[in-house]
Length: 82
Image (cartoon, rainbow, N blue to C red):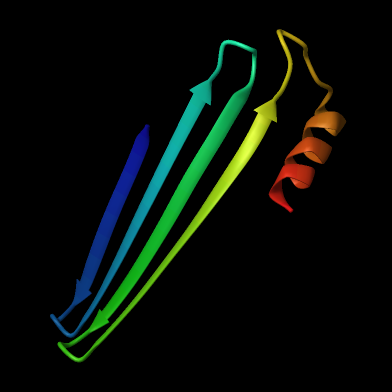
């Protein structure tokens, strides 16, 4: 797991926070799965807060020890994304 967190404040009036989490799992059947979550938060004074979170999941390789070409990998990622 990789976790990156950042926050910035402008004179205590506006605060912006970002959090990125990336996970990778290698399974015994040769499948490599990647998951990521990006969270974004904007707070203005005490009266307004906007929070957005998006997640993605990709299967990067399938099969028992098989290798894929670069072109195949791009198609596989695109197919899993939709």
